Image (cartoon, rainbow, N blue to C red; front, side, top):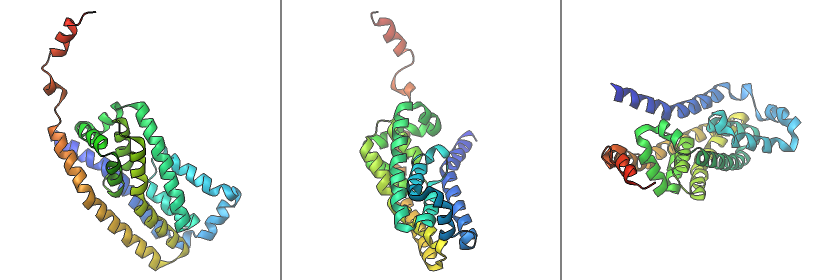
Length: 247
């Protein structure tokens, strides 16, 4: 029973960000251009002038601290700036937020991630150190992977900075472009463009699950193989060794 509850909590942690993102996109679709369009948004942004893109990128950079889903913000960016500009701004924000998360995780160490990931943390840390670029790249492609948590786990376990952050940026390109196009088409009232973007997002999610299966398999197998601290050394051995060490 305890193992079932633990597994359920783990899946809730994984699925929650994706459910929130999908719910936000559905809400945007239901509100539609009758509620808000690009002209209305531009009027709201007039006080910011040329600093509107900078404000948007800065908000994306600190997005992990707000716990808001990045996919919804990218769609809103598409509504505000159009597909190409929103894609560029969102990728810049992703790079900055990944950099922030990386160095915060290195500062905090492994203890917070050990509590969050539980028994799977040693396997996740091992995979992150061994495949730092591939680790974050697949985490961004796979919708079942909480990208921020995976990046933090990798950084805390000693994964390299540039491969990890580059994996985040490149892995988010397909989803970022499609989501920005979805928001842009929605704000302009282009039903065909919105539908094509939505189909592309679904295809991207499916491909992410397929490509991410290898990673999940490796983590699950490694979590079984990783010995516990008690199995690595008999009880009492560290104490005896300490007693024999000269002061």
